[in-house]
Image (cartoon, rainbow, N blue to C red; front, side, top):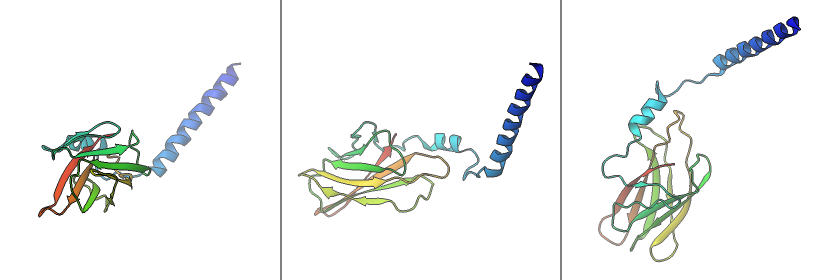
Length: 157
């Protein structure tokens, strides 16, 4: 009985040792020294950036303009339905996704009109190597008016 317990203990220690050894060999370096702390610093919405937080995340900086992202929770590398509502008159509506201080490449989706004040499309968010998830979605409305409008939204999962 005693020898069986000793054999089990040795086997468990061997498995732990092999796991640590393999983990040390396949470990990937991070982009920043402490991704969690960096994400906490950057996770607060900058002043003036609306925050959306439900299935159709309504938040507006321009009167009546709202951004909806679904399904929730938002996952990277999966199709995301994008909806902008409250657009009175526009020739083109796009939404671009970016991170503050991080080059995540160009990620802009052109939306199609869906009724008099609603525009819809599909997007995919890429996975950040540092583990950050603090996306900023910027809605750009280009219309017959002389100026275009850009409204940033802090994306929350």
